[in-house]
Image 1: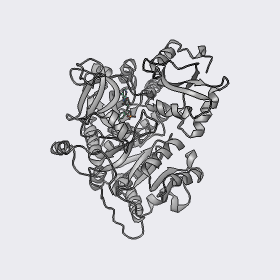
Image 2: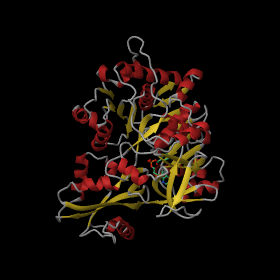
Image 3: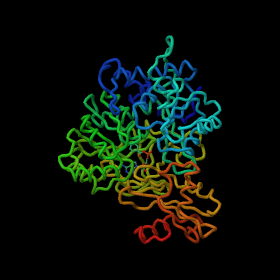
Length: 547
Ligand code: OOB
């Protein structure tokens, strides 16, 4: 069975093959090469555990074979939620080997997000962790089975019962020889990436073997990855940045080593960097700020091995960018990417001024970029416009979302990312704002509409608008403006309301403000610009009695 996705038009697909971008090989190709040529090289480190390429391949093959023996294969989907542990990659690779397409939820996701993904994908397999509050008992697993009646296989990290223990399934080969075959054609869906979203329901992004593999290979090349690379994965492992830009898959392609960290917190990361000789790391801007603060307090810090720091996911202030090379003693690389596809990098040999002042240029000569005004007419270099793009690894449509796709794609298949950018004459992009209704909370994306509709489910809330407010550390935080039919609604009640609905904690508004009526635009829509301006005018939190 094929999983639906909007394919590239035949002529473009042919062009991408002719250019050698699409090789019609599986996304596990890199691992397979390392297994055959460098089986004893260490490819993955997690705490005190080290995995050689032979181990990574062997463990993932055990799991793949056992799942395959249980009837899972091409056309099936899986819901996976794991923290930053080695098992994340072992599971991902196992599923790719047998053509089961997973969605890798963030560990911070809760009931609402996981139920939403299960609803859309109807997975047959669930892989999760007992240490997550939702999977400490059986209740939510039963709920998921209600949502996805074909869910027949559950495997858990930290589980003692062998029939459900992920560790057991990874370590124990199946009885008898079960062939692991790769039945998924490379132009089909390999897995689903998560969209930051701007709509009510989180959308899924089908990524094919061909398109993702190209982005990984080309990224590894641009970032100079090789067997010497030791890459610190401190951001959530499913995120496109640390998975493929060039991320862990880039490292496996190049034969380097992925070193896991539980979080980007500097004290922990600095120790891991020193102990493991990490050469490269990828961070979001708030984490860089913390790293800079700690490194400035402790000069001669343990970052000697660090050669490259990638920063992306949200706007990185030029003033901070300028501090990175001197304070952390490494090369800065800015990365502007999206789970939907397009990724831009400053190049490692770029002039430092360009690295400090732009977010890079696209991976591929065949990434087509248009920067357009409201009428979708192209603007001149240096002018601000909306970013539209298509190319060999930019998706052609969200999963089963024809109406939303009609809004964010044009007739030529260009995807409108919702970012406001400028292009330099050399083709480098600068991100200057956005038109999508989203809050970028230090790299974590919050779709305003999703939270507004949850707030409106509270009986006392009659109007709700979520907007971004500036924050010194996070870049942006979220503020909910509310009109209510009572005078005694408290922020704590609304926070509880949202958490009870099962939304991830990072999406709960940082501030609530109660107003008498929503300001409206000329066409009668909520005037969010006015709400944002109001916040900017009264930015001092102490002067805010409604909090
Ligand atoms: C990355 O991916 P997503 O899907 O979480 O978020 C994409 C959005 C972009 O459309 C843009 O609004 C924002 O995040 N963004 C940036 C940025 N990088 C991403 N805004 C300003 N400056 C940057 N450098 O965030 C992502 C995916 C792959 C690599 C890196 C980041």
